[in-house]
Length: 209
View (cartoon, rainbow, N blue to C red):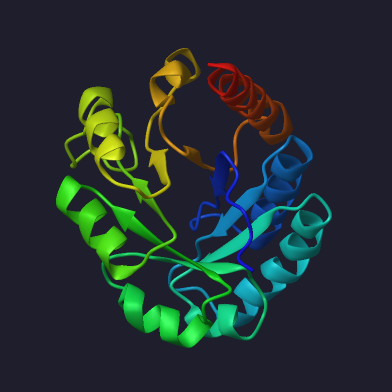
């Protein structure tokens, strides 16, 4: 059976050294993150495996999930619960053939058409970005909350919003599966706890309606 998706996904910063990523990821889990996406483009596979060996048991202790960008071989070998795919990655259907039906397959999307394509191809979830302007993607036009809400509502697919969503704007994410955030934060445990508390409260309110 596939693991359940949480409301907060922490995406590791591929520019940082493994020790920094390791400490920030564990702090985020301690603060309430229940999904870590290991993004290490161009880094040695051994480095990815070592991070998985740290994060996976920590996440399994709290019923969380570990995702790895692109590396379907790492996921198929059992180091993670799912794979996250970008536009340069293997297709969703081909990735599913490799990792199997019991593991998660997610997709990065940036438009309504890409969301619909991910759903049609059998993705388990998608990230939608950038919602707001970000320093890491200052050459890309932000989608904005209105479009993000409309597109998310139009697909029967869990969607995580990614990119520049600030604390004062968390309420705009109501209706999405949750938020995805690049780590590490200045204070990973505290920042993650704040986001998780807000998202859990919003889910509780929606459940009572």
